[in-house]
Image (tube, rainbow, N blue to C red; front, side, top):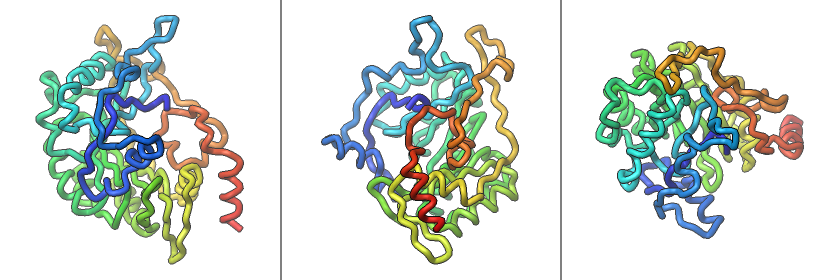
Length: 302
């Protein structure tokens, strides 16, 4: 996908959320094994790749989600990480969304010029349950960074972030159920509880997908299709706008880029019924929002 940068591929299962890892599932479908870790070839330098006219493929103001098929702070990636940091530093006009379960490795893996954080890095930890939230957020709290967030994915139980949210350093919370090879349930009351916490703290909350097995008001809904999951997450009506996240992005001369000159995501009609839209980089015509998905939605309504 256009908004994903995977400089390396593969990972080691690390905690409860990894049990049914989607990357392992997808690799198995291709006859590969997710524990095989390697630096990618053609896409390693994706943030600085250019079009034929000399312009960058990734435009100023876009957001790149990093290491969606691995973990940015994976120990096995230590030999390659500085090159990745160099590109992140070079493209100070692009937002880089970093997500990790390895919160304990962040500090030792930061670049020498990090200081109190890069303006264009959104540092996030994954917290699949209360135990991991307590463990990882206590670490994230102490790490210097301009922007910090939480992903409760896959959501494996009720999670109370209220004490951390009240401190004011978390800018965004994203949650979603388990999918692909995993079907551990996600319960609507868990999502509602987390949404309420964010509402009270005025923090952005985004429910991106229900997961394959979603339980609401005692009824179990099985939805293998991720497009359908995103639509039903949107219809749950639990997202919270929260206070805006303010980005300061800079050009190659070090001058701050006016907001009017930054990339603006464009959406198609079907995007407005997708749970991901609030954090989406814009429609890439991925075709998950097909007529067959909509037919399933109508069937469920009936």
